[in-house]
Length: 143
Image (tube, rainbow, N blue to C red):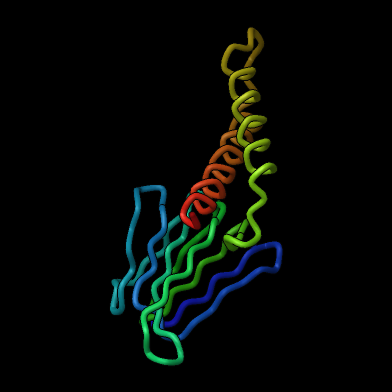
């Protein structure tokens, strides 16, 4: 199965010998295998798990933290477009922890605000939280 992952920041991953792709959609976690039914789904910030065959025909696994986006499956081809794609080597633990705390603080502020809650800002804070959690989870997998 072919896989192409693109991000708005220009990072990408592609492989033509993919065995499985596991990603979190709005409906829950899915694993896409060869000959999967055609589909388009929104994805949530999560850790993207990819199992593929390397040049020696050995199974390899590559994991990424991805942001919000879309997954499309059609004719044994998977395309993912996300607003964030981070390899485990690129995770900055301190920045991810800081972003998580900042997001939690913002969400707490909006939650108990006596004024009308700005839902757009709350959703942005929630997205920041989910992205930072994905990076932290990816970092923990490396250990």
